[in-house]
Amino acid sequence: MAKAKTVFFCKECGYESGKWLGQCPGCRNWDTMVEGKSVTKGTTAPKTYRTPAGGSQGVVSLSKVEFRKNERLETGIGELDRVLGGGIVPGSLVLVGGDPGIGKSTLLLQMCKELANKEKKVLYISGEESCEQIKMRADRIEDFKGDLLLLSETNLTLIEEIAGEIKPEILIIDSIQTMYKEDVSGSPGSISQVRESTSVLMHIAKILGITVFIVGHVTKEGNVAGPRLLEHMVDTVLYFEGENHASYRMLRAVKNRFGSTNEVGVFEMKQTGLSEVTNPSEYMLQGKPVNEPGSVVTCTMEGTRPILVEIQALVCRTSFNFPRRTVAGADFNRLNILMAVLEKRMGLKMAECDAYVNVAGGMKLNETSIDLSVVAAIVSSYFNKEIDEKTIIFGEVGLTGEVRAVSNANTRVLEAEKMGFNRVILPAANLKGLPEVKLKLCPIKSVREFGQYLN
Image 1 (cartoon, rainbow, N blue to C red):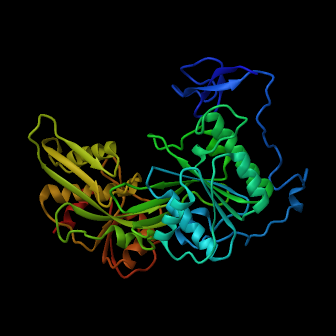
Image 2: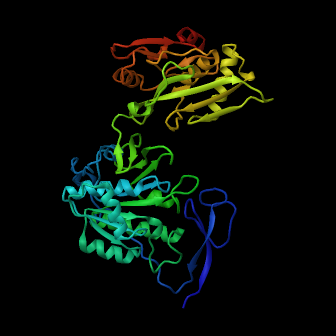
Image 3: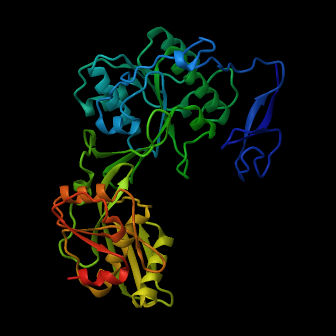
């Protein structure tokens, strides 16, 4: 019997070493080497699959490859189809990651419901729940008219055999960290097991033409647990995001071989499951205060979708030696820059004030197009003067106080008009090329010009 030996794997790139190293020689990252087990020579190596995608068809000329553009399968969930690029590509391997309890399994079970109702053969395999527990969740979602095949199993060798016999159109694995192969050392969830398990599932997807959805747990840093190689092997990586105390959820594609990574899907968690939010702007502005200083509405872009959100600011005289700066949902360093611009270019005594900025609704915004709205909220709170509630503000602010152009200005303006706003304060550089709209356009070139719009 072969003796097991200890080796070290890089959890980012999968590099293997006989001893622990502070820095991985493969990806040059620090503190990524973790201990695992391998076997000495004389044992059977784990089976790997090197068959080309689509089967053993050998070398094929690109001009002779046939492709049908309309072969995508719609899931029945519009927001999920949007993120996938129009639907499911047959034979693809999709990884869905997210925090515990965020709704990954619920989303996939709802997708299974829609596909089963279309008489598609779907096999749901869970390594975390029994079939009875899955049935309980399905009863909560309701409207199951079709038949869904269930299996509670973690042995991938058995799963591979069952998938080959049943040949479902869609296969769900929940989750990859619970799966294992008997001829691979390490416990379920270890680097070696996750790597080999993904290889087996890729074989099922590419050779048998079965679309495979994999649920992956995430680490405290927000990355899918296991080797980074996992994300490289799959075709699509989806992240399900949201705050546990907030009801909305965001589905993003960080990798998509068959579509854009700029799309985002919005859902609301309800007692009966996830509900699509087809109008995120209306949803995000619920409960907005009327005619209150420090409250401003801006338009941000989530991929190609415009979303109206509220920016709130509270500025008050500080009682500390160093003024406090607190930000929720935006970049803290960007706030310090904008407050320095206000002090230098507009003469506001920001060094004597505490400043608190919040993006209402729990969204996290990183684009610079919200600069002008943050400045407007701070100025409004500083002078205790409100801004008209039917005003949208967006634009990037430079260090000299200039207001610079942003992308997709026409999309933002049209969204503001659709939502019933009657005035848009925007960069003067974006005025050219805008479509004809009924609302009033107020172009500005510098933050110094903003004072005229305070009530």
